[in-house]
Length: 394
Image 1 (cartoon, one colour):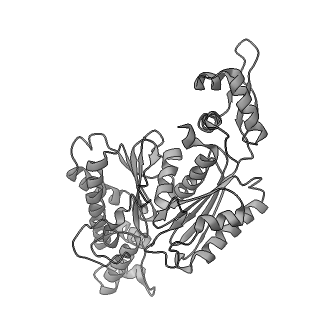
Image 2 (cartoon, helix red, strand yellow; image 1 turned 180 degrees about the vertical axis):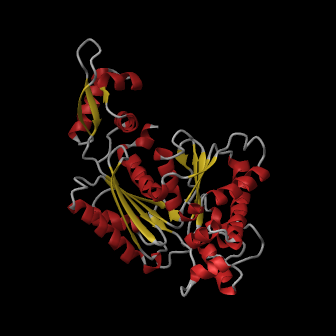
Image 3 (cartoon, one colour; image 1 turned 30 degrees about the vertical axis):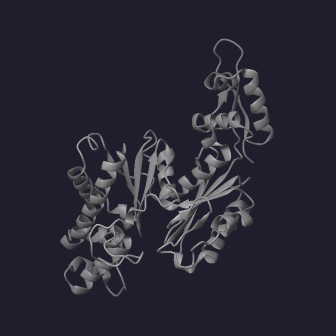
């Protein structure tokens, strides 16, 4: 189910972004006759895209009828992370209907993880949250061939290389499906429902198990020629250093990410150089980024040093991107972003110090307010755009 032509795509796009409207309002907006608008709305109603929404407020004459997106439209966002699986349902205007999540290990492989995602969707359907399933957007934490719908040599996803993720969901759920990397989808979530709603050019930086950057320019995600744009975690910040998951040394991700914080904090704890981290480790095998945050807030100087060093490295890489792309905003999200303002302060300081004054003269750098929902909102937004023809309308 998709719009038949560009006029219908423009109508659906306007109803999604602006809510219920009359035929007269839509005709003026689109510079088309009311009869033409009426014809297209009738077709859209027959196909289940739109429905009547009552009457407009009286302005002294006959009250106009309003049309809105069908309240039965449902889009599912599936956000597959290294350690979590999130599934969210939205309506046609990307407002949340419900959301569920569980802990996973991405190394369990595609059959196990994707099968579990389908089970979660089926459960939501059985609970009545999905009267229809109009499309599914899926995000994964690795490089994606957007055109082909599979991952390509993902460093932290053994067994997933070229696995037909999009085809799997299409066969299991019988609906349109699109696959993208998780960072691009988080950027789309921010563009539609987050801090960057009115910013056409911005960067979304995810600091989690790995590091990536969603690049939005002119209101669209920049994927590059084969879908690998924004993979900033593998920009070298030093010639040597820890071995990265990609097999090289010196990558930003190897110096500062959820995995590297776990490695470095655990080493400090075991050496006894950080009493706070040592106490948190106890008899566990390893610490997490969250533990680093706890120790930092408890005044542990070594934990704070890890965060500051990492923030400076991220800021150094972002300065290069700012000088090159001149974004209007930078939004920072992901699990490690939970370290909060001590991390953000270092990123800002290094970024502003190393970027040109013009590029940073009016450049806000902020923490995402969508938290763990950015990915599922963005995934739902990606497939919503496709089904409603938003890109066709623009």
